[in-house]
Length: 307
Image (cartoon, rainbow, N blue to C red; front, side, top):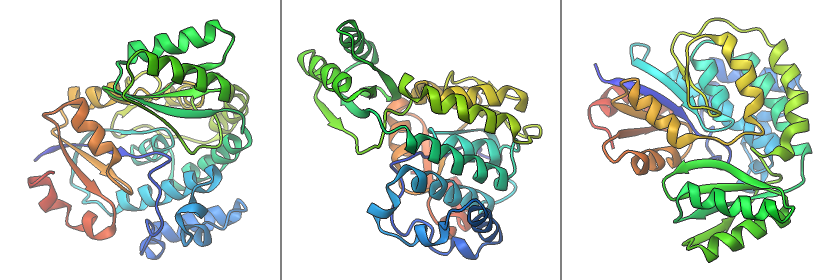
C-alpha cells in the first residue's frame, strides 16, 4: 500500500462553497453545534462569499471544519506515516493524529482566530525569487533601522513570507527588491501573523491549549515551529503556542514527511496550494488533493494515480 502523508492548508485557502455537503456529515453536524455553543454561527458563515469568509475569526474555524470532515471521510485503511498542517491547518493535523478530539480542536481554533484577529497591528508580504537567507538578511537590515519584521513563512524555495509592522514590512520589501526579488506581493491579512507582534496573543492562547485535554498520538505530527516529527502529545502544547509568533517552516516540514517514508502527500482541504509548494520543495514527490466528499470517497483510485 502507498505510504501517505496528510497535509492540511492554512488561512488563505478558504473559498466560497468549500463546505458544500459537509454540514450533512455526522461530524460536520457536531462541529457546527460546537461552534454555535461558542457563539459562532459557522453554518451561516460557510454559506458566505469569499469576502465574508476572509476575516481571520471566520476563516480559521471554517477551514478546520472542512479539513476535519474531509479527513473523516477518507478510507480508514490508509497507510499514514505522518501528518502536518500549515499554520491553522496544524490543528486539523493534531486532531486527525489523535491528540485532540475534533470538538476540542474546533473550540481551540475559534479562540485562536479571535485572539489573532484582535492583534490587528502589522501586515505580511510574500517575497518571490530570493533565497531564504537573502530575505532574512533584508529583514535584519530593516531591524537594524529599528523596524519590526521577520520571516513568517518558509513556504518553498523562492517563496518566503515576511511579517511585522507595516513600516517594517515595507522597508524589508524595498531591500529585497534591491537585492533581486522577482516580486513582492502584499498579503490581505489583518495582522502580522507568525511574528513577535503576535506574542501577547500567543501568551493568552497558551492557557487555552494547556487546558484542553489530549490523548496519545496515533501517527507523528510534523510541527511548524521546528519541522520535528512529534510522536507524543505532551510535546505539542508548547509548539502550538509558539507557532503564533514563530515562522512556519513548511519547506522543512515537507522534507521531514518525505523522510518518514511518505510516497504521496495528500492535501486535505480546499485548493491545492500545498500540493504546488510540495512539488517545488521536492520535484520527485507525488501529490493528490481531496477537496470534497466525492474526492475523499474516490481516494482509492487517486492513490494509484497521483497528480
